[in-house]
Length: 243
Length: 307
Image (cartoon, rainbow over all chains, first blue to last red; front, side, top):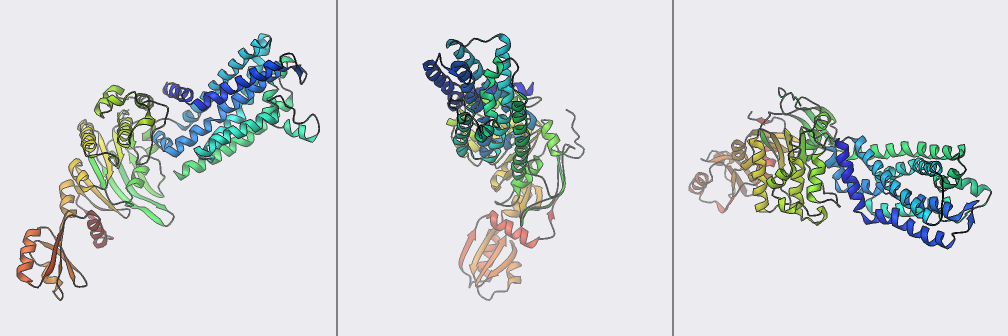
């Protein structure tokens, strides 16, 4: 039960930080309505533009939702709050779980809002397809959640907000979240397909076909997680041994 | 939670910690019994914070053993029987005072009621204020509330009154006394002799990472609060000066002699009678830094332990 109350306050802090709410919720929603609204009947990447753009903008929002946990971690470290927590019975596992769960709850809210926004622009999916899309978005977020923890122990709070903003926009743009194809074929496309954000953006299209991602998608998500996780553990250890 | 008190609330054996070339803590042995209120007194850089950080499990010692109610520090922390107020910690934003205290309370197995703690620490009127809008003294009180709400058996306070004004200090120590009166063990670090003397049963004097004295507060106070008499007195024999009534020791710097006194008045009278040539006579009050230097210089290897 300990963790539940702690998590509740963590969520409260999230919603009281306007930057988090704006960049993971309001911004993607706004861009979606403006751009997808103007291209309601267009087709893009083989599917209806609003359907494609719905997971595109959800990608932008959910990445901010989880990567921004890093700015909380960095702030708490700088304030000495992390040290204060370390002399309470709160375990390290609960500390990070609360951060990740809170990021995921925010991501879920963003996804829900984007799904509703999608239906207002004519997106219609079966229950199974909706569920598959949500599931893929949540699964594809894992490396970004790890990235948030990594950045939180690597950067100062001042450099973190721009880093979160910059990194997520670059990932979103290259991954095609804004409805711009950086490459149609060739080596550059291969590179882009190696980004986890590409597969997040593809979540709606993949759900439509019924089968989810091809193996390549799962491999990319898995490899990014496998590379980032030990790095996060490393910087965490370096950081706490210094305290 | 059953705790093993037989080994003391805190037991340190051969505790050492270095940072690069700086030997912050040099082989400290110390036992604090449950229910004691103990001050670690020492100048900046004496090793007070390092010692407290090691007891809290925040810093790993290079050598030595620490036991807190018979447990390793991290285990005692996990059991929720220890809490503390660190020297450098700020509060997180976006939460109100009551929310912050309630959040920390939720982490402990048997916390005290939040309202009771807000009352005790004098911050009931700040309960709904965002943490970001607190003054230094106010946030110091909130940090104290966070340490108290844990309802710990052992409370560690690292220079807890640094940001408080005179009134705030008095309120603070009144609360600490209330906690100590419940049989809790309290260990606080300070560099104010008056604070250590007024609020601790026992004072541990720390200098250069070593315990240079350890005893009842009155005893330690007497030892470090000696006054000194300075006078320009060329050619006088130090042995004769040291033998004057009320004088503990005599020292010379050029033409100046420095007398450490237990009874300044008697010493002054005797000095002026026996050495009419004394000029520029000056009496100085308790200088803690000087007392530390004297204690560490004379007892470099041999510790003054009165317990």
